[in-house]
Length: 340
Ligand code: NAD
Ligand code: UFG
Image (cartoon, rainbow, N blue to C red; front, side, top):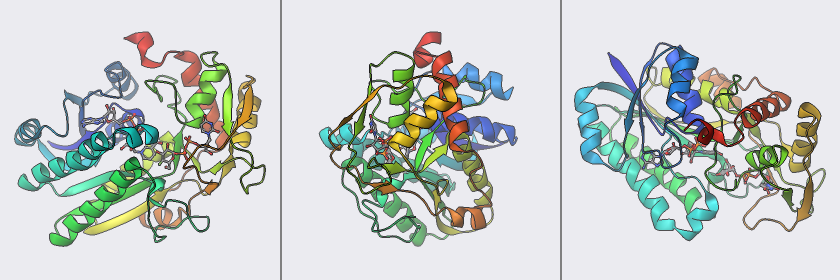
């Protein structure tokens, strides 16, 4: 049996992707150190997919563990989600971010190369565009970063491209996600931040469910239609579907491919609050506070390359994203902790 190794497969995007890979009859091994996820997601993945992924609790920095996995199983491709992702924390603990995200990936690639597995899909981010000169953003826009998290993503992109250039057997797909939100339709899996959320949507849903008092809207003086920051929110299920297309694509080409994954439409913070209130009937009290350092005014994708080359496009609109995020939060007010 040939396996796809999914690092970080118990996390937010990984768990949704695993379900979709299993639905396509792919055999999946999840490797996750549970540093930002819960074991409680595993029975939910199994019950939703009616299939059992293999789960290994472990770290991508553990070379002996990786070697034993590649020895034991015939792994033909890797979908590499594992990484730390909090921008603020990365500025406080840069070495932790570089060690985990950059060194962890080097370690993974060394073992992959040793076992002749040279196909990888990597979770990158729109953060690699820095503050773009214009929107929508295309894949050939210049890259730059403003924090260690973003720098770690860009370093890994460069490392994987250099690796591919050194050995044409490598097939590398770099997926630059815009702003993933939403949850599985069942309300059984979703985003479960460990602390107070940094990102807008989990903050909004936690205010609505009564865990947090009110939302701070970080600035209303940006040059956008209502002064608040504009982003390209994409349903996590659409994102997961893109990974299935990417894994399929790995069999068809050699080289490096880079794709933006977004809807191509930008919404402001206040658009999100108003639409959330409309679709859920819940109130989201908020106040306007100063800008968050490092934030940009506007960021949305030109995702047409993914449509033509990957055969993928986002199909779910903002209302569905918010309804699904709310179903998850209202059914699991404390995330996976409720079932641990
Ligand atoms: P997540 O934190 O929910 O998932 C990441 C998973 O990786 C977690 O389950 C964590 O326990 C695991 N992990 C971390 N370090 C590990 C290590 N050294 N070894 C093994 N497992 C490890 O995050 P997510 O939102 O699902 O994001 C997945 C990937 O996508 C990350 O690489 C992230 O940087 C990237 N990304 C996320 C967003 C976003 O807004 N969610 C945007 C752009 C890119
Ligand atoms: N915002 C608020 N209040 C909050 C949280 C966010 O007003 O409590 C605003 C931000 O200022 C921004 C928008 O909501 O205008 C979205 O903020 P997020 O933190 O949800 O998302 P970002 O676009 O800042 O960053 C996210 C990820 C990054 C990733 C980037 C691009 O957190 O890791 O998308 O993919 F790099």
